[in-house]
Image 1 (tube, rainbow, N blue to C red):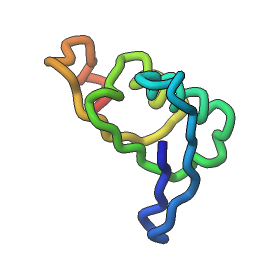
Image 2: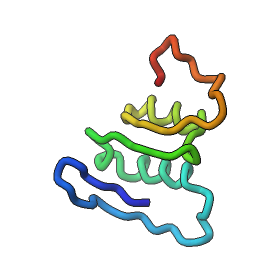
Image 3: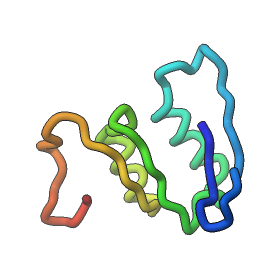
Image 4: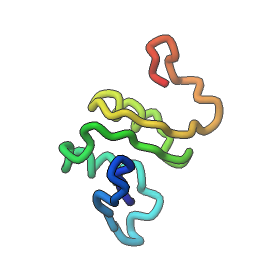
Length: 85
């Protein structure tokens, strides 16, 4: 995963987790946030629809980390009344 500072136009850091972690992007992201929470202050995470899970959405809201993630399917379990999106 790559993390980029758009304000200063520089990469912040890159995590390389090897082939054994292929298709584990969501859990890898959550682990990285838990290990380095200071790196995620005042950021907006942007992810494609492979990052859309209810678990990650809840995790980001609870931490609180701003995010934009494409939704897979119709996302019927999102509670729009609480401004989750």
